[in-house]
Structure formats: C-alpha cells, structure tokens
Length: 66
Image 1 (spheres, helix red, strand yellow):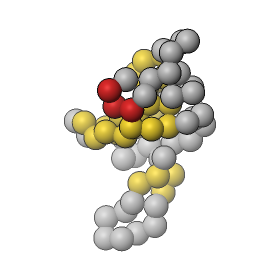
Image 2 (tube, helix red, strand yellow; image 1 turned 180 degrees about the vertical axis):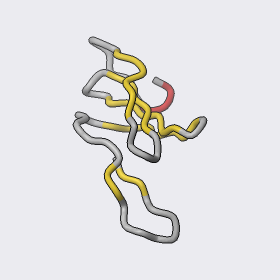
Image 3 (tube, helix red, strand yellow; image 1 turned 90 degrees about the vertical axis):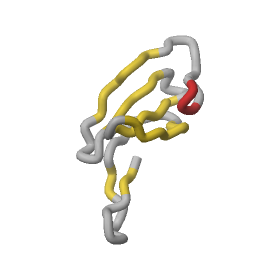
Image 4 (cartoon, one colour; image 1 turned 90 degrees about the horizontal axis):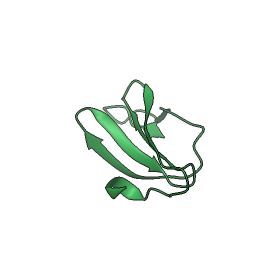
C-alpha cells in the first residue's frame, strides 16, 4: 500500500506482504482494507503501523463490506 505525500510528493510504501488487497476505506484515521486471498482484514495508519483486525480462515473477505 502506498500513500501520497501532501503537496504532490512521491508515493511511499506503508505496508507490504499481502496476497491481494482491495476495498480501502478511511475510518477514524486508519486505512481499512481486506486481503482477499490472505483471508484477513487489516488497518494501517499514515505512519505505516499495520494491525491485523480479523482473520477469516476459509473465507475471502471482499472490499470494505467484508
């Protein structure tokens, strides 16, 4: 996942190591997204602090609706 710096700076890497991310949604200062084929939901902050919020073994969360 990358972030654009204010003022048109270059994108920077926030987090990596996922299989297939989708459905990004900003909520309460965090970017929520699903890793569909990784079977999990994560959040990341603009500083790159990433947290596993939900594991979905055997299921494939899709988008922000999970």
